[in-house]
Length: 405
Image (cartoon, rainbow, N blue to C red; front, side):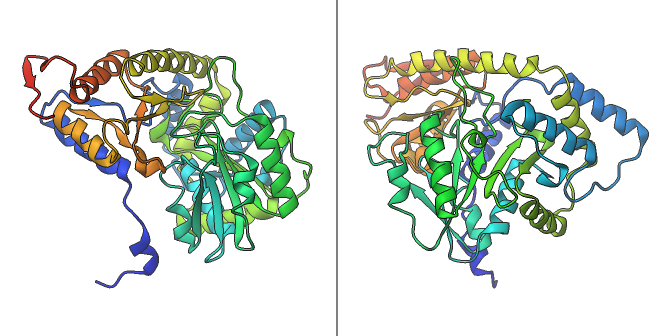
């Protein structure tokens, strides 16, 4: 079979592959625990459900404009003004089938073949792959001090004539860290000076803990004209627990949004009008659900961190947001893919290998599930890895005996 060079260069999603393995075990009735999840367990807002049902009952489920409905754009305009302090026009907004599509379309609109887009490590698994679909190259930037907090100097060293853009995701998936206002301000200034695009992937920006706040790039931008190369990406998936609704958006200059809309119009056309109704309902409705989710996640995080600290030799940077932590398990096993498979095979706990996020020896653990899953899952992991633990473990009525060293 003859395939394109771009197609052959795209790697499968490791998170989807592990999720498929989890689903097979669960269908068999095995007591598997998912600590790799990327979606909250809370219900979608009632306003979203009611808006969906109301429109469904009309029977008028038609095509939507390629850049989104007027109503959905107005919701994003209000959202941008409330949470970013920035008034934008409808022509500055494009609605997509999820924030992932908004990111992909933005990259296709700004990247030429062989150009580069930089992003801090650790990084979301799709960042290295998405630029390839535009014939471009994604370049991870590793903080020189070995932490999860990059400095401007780390980026300055990697910029050259083929560099076209920088992506920042804060709070960060997979580490949960929030980049400081000082760092974001420096990057905004640097991108304006070097004429680089800056994509802010803000999908977790309201899911932050202990009074922290994600930096707002608009606060530091000096160029507010239509020549601005600042792109804000967001969506309803995480904060409203609406992952299956697949509605996201981009806010950028009018010319860029026009170009992105042309691309999206040929790829998928506009997002489902029904699901846009749901997103509008959530965004214009009571916002207490977001705060309830945030508080639940903060409590779950605290429990997970306490349990991880009981491990001998596990190092973890305490997350400041999202629903993930990226813990260093290299003292137990250097190969994170082998470690992840070992844990699901031996004790039926699903974790995500850190190598896929640019951090070998680490595991990404999610605390968006139940407290029972968090505590029992980590207890199983500790039993499997800590040879000082008792030799036997009960999972329900099933007795496991450690037969490895």
